[in-house]
Length: 470
Image 1 (spheres, one colour):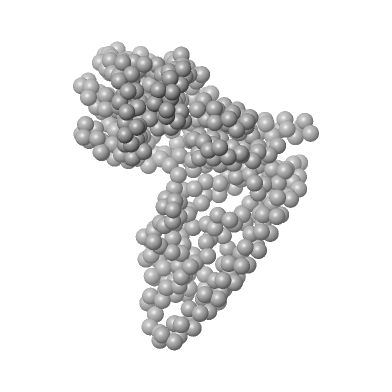
Image 2 (tube, helix red, strand yellow; image 1 turned 180 degrees about the horizontal axis):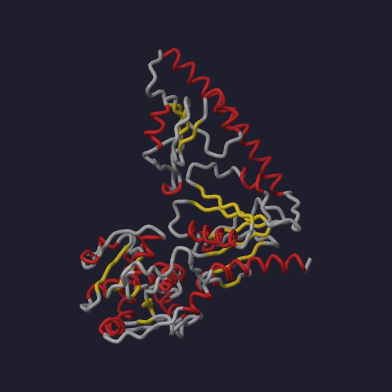
């Protein structure tokens, strides 16, 4: 297990920081903080912090990163006596810093809670994200960029994993009129004046469990899917629908890329250990048979399955059904012999022997994904809960025709027949790929109705109407 460390040798600090060591319960979210003494090193590492030892106490008290737990003597030729003196002084300073940090953080929280904001001045928007999230950080960044394009004052606060999560220094200094969050309310520390917009895109634990959620008068909730609507309704929380949006600055037609006769899938495999339990495998076998025979899986059918197997409906819809529709469909795709070349990208597919010949690795968000979609005729994007997922919007913006799982008639999701192909069975998918005459599709309505500009306008309009009605 790694610990946040203060290094007396700057070269050793640089070496360790370069390893990007992660630790803690949420491994993906905690990055080892490396403080160091001596001359400042020119570096872009997000976890390397220059803090001369003579400024140690003040730097830690008023800092934002986690306070180091240990000191590292590597590279120093000193006696045991001197080392013990330094260690004793370091430990005392760390304890002092922790006590003062608690006091400072309490001050930040108290003042944030009592902010009196002037809404006649230009609005300040605060968005927080974590650089280890695969989707949420890019959604937040796209919203922030769209606000900036409209001339708004925006602070996009990207957490790198070294931050003290109890420290609200940046919010205190920035004094936002508006906060925007993905999947988290982050509202308990906010004053009554602050507008807070929350967009739920995943079935977070605080939505699924039986706990009450704290909702303020100026909290506005958006839900991505009907499955999340149900969770919000159970907690008596009002919400609005908001489908995914497309970042048109990253995803657009690139005429320098040759479009080839191929179909690409980009996304992770959904198989996981939670699906390997005996009682779940029984459900999977039952549903897989229905899926292969073209079952529509209406809400009534889902309730019937819940009753038959005594399975949690949220788990059934978000894990079991998502796994079957995605993973089995990709296996279907790889088994069809057509004139279209098949490429599969994303985590987990190399565990499927049938997919390995078509597996091309993992793509980075943005340019790499856009280039692949620009090179493809079709984008395969099967998902149980919704057709209008991020990948569908990204593909259409890049000119690739989406092929999506057909939920028309059993979902309240908008239908865009003019923009995509739908399949429900293996034969449906095979017929699309074996058809030599491909129907030209029109993406204009789909892209216009799912722009970040439209979503941001909705937020700005909500703020304006609320202020006018007071």
